[in-house]
Image (cartoon, one colour):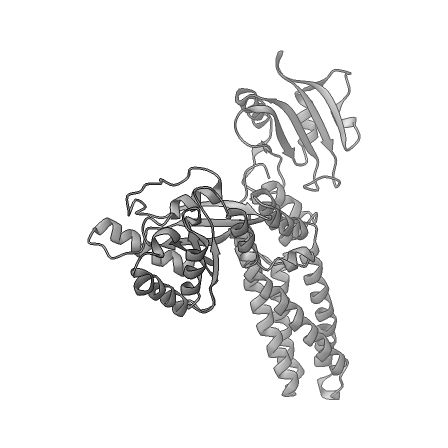
Length: 470
């Protein structure tokens, strides 16, 4: 990307609306905007103070394109650190394009995806992890994602990394200084204090790395597989959880032959529910493919909801022959995966039968048992609350730093590996020159996170995922 010219893009969502905002940034932003803006009070736009708004018209020759509000942000006190002009016009797609094309003909260039935020990074308005958080904030669709992105964008994660890096850099400088006096065999770096620092860095990095387990599932939505035999109410349960008719419901067994997915927010956490084909022996090739997909979804799910028809199961001889065997098999294959056995259709079952059924199902160790009626939605709220217990929201409640970015996670793993090498080297009393190599590598990987170490390919990959206008 060329970063010294003047760029323009629609900053609001594309399409017609009440208002649209067109953003211009660059050295000539004010001059180009002033050329086609006429203030109702005859103000000269270039002479106005930063952070002021002006009413007027965008005019091409003698043709008035629209009545607009123009906001002025002068460098360095703007989002990009450059002169920025934002034009609030009416949301007609015709008006938007007329204004944008007018300014392109007069010296602006259409911005690339993420180019405004890239300029903010290059001009020191934010570091790289904060820039990435902008994209996460735009994409956030629940309270947890929003909280993680906001914390990162405000510099919480960056500050932790920069503090560690600076402390390590201070000791690294002393280690490097020792190399200049190798013949005198002197130590400038206090090895006891250095070891304490390495232990501290190890602890912080491990905590951040461990947080990725929760951060990653929160960011992507926690996958929950709804499984069980045909016609036990899986599709009805999906519709009840989503509070909409998302899946086809039929009394004919085997209606669902492919997986159906949708996501909702429960307690600020995104859950992705997957309705699967019923598990049974079948000669139908298409249904068989659907059942194979069910087992794949069980493997990839974070939580499993195994449905049992409470009305028919209590009278069926297959409960212990098939259902219990299937539950034992799933638990054996995935011993750490939470399984909630959901007894459905309790509106058709008396309490004695329900207690008997629960007693039979409790033969499977390590499962939770809940009862509900998906049709009448009795017990649905209790099931939603139970799902939240499988998510460690303590870090969110305590406003702790949570890593949700795969690139950051990879860099943290590499940094920890180098720090562990440094610690081993100190224990083995290796020479300062060898220790310095590992310290430099650790500093490099920590710097990758905040952008103190970067390259054009990395920046291209990150900002290519942004929307145009941001």
